[in-house]
Length: 283
Image (cartoon, rainbow, N blue to C red; front, side, top):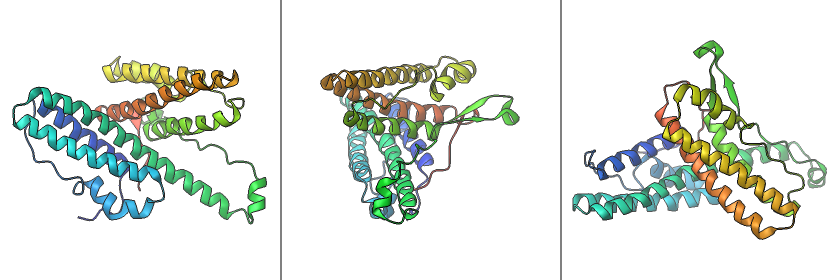
C-alpha cells in the first residue's frame, strides 16, 4: 500500500480509536486483534513512503517517526502481557501507550504547523525581491488559526469550534512564547481564558449542549491552567525572574499537549454533534 497524501484529521481519529480499542482489551472489554507494525499502518506507510522524504527538513517529522515506532513496540508488549494474563504489566504498559499516543497527536499537529509556517514564509519571500528588503519588511501577521464558525443556518443557532484551528493555535502560542524570553515578555499579552475563542466555546455552547462531561471538564481545567502559566511566564520575564518563567513555560507546554489530546478526544466522541468542525488538512 502506498500513501502519497496523509489526511491528518482522519489519521488522528483513527489512531485514537485504536488506542481506545487497546485499552478496552486491557480492561477485559475488547477482543484480541493482531497489531500492524509501525511501517504497515497508514501513518507508518506514509512516513516511510512520503513523509520523511517530503518533510525531512522539519525536526517534528523525525520526532513523529520515533514516537510512532515506540508506540507500536509498547503496544505489542501490551498485547503480549494481556495474552499472558499479566494484568499489572499490561496496565503499566497501557499508561505508556497513552503517553506516547498523546505525543503522536501533538507531533502530527506540530508538523501541520511547521508546514503552514514554511508555506507562509516561502510565499512571503517570493514576493520580496532582495534579502535587504526582506530585512526591512515587518514580520507577517499571525495566521487566524482559531475561529468560531457560525452555523445558525445549519444547526439552529449553535456555534461550532474549528478544532483544527484550536489545536494549531495553542501550538502557535507556545512557539511564540519562546520569543518572549528574548524580548523579556514586554510585547506579548495573553487573553484571559474565558475571553479567548476556546474558552468562550467551552463555557458557552459546549457546556450547554454537551453538559459537564469528564473530557470537557478536563479540557476546561487544562485550558485555564495553560492561560495561568502563560501569564506567569510573561509576568516573570517582565520582573527578570527567568527561572520561574522557564518553570511556568514547561507547565504551559505540557498543558498545550493535553489540550491537543482532549480536543481530539472530544472531536471523536462528538463527531456528529455539529459542535466541532475541522478544516481539511492534508500532508
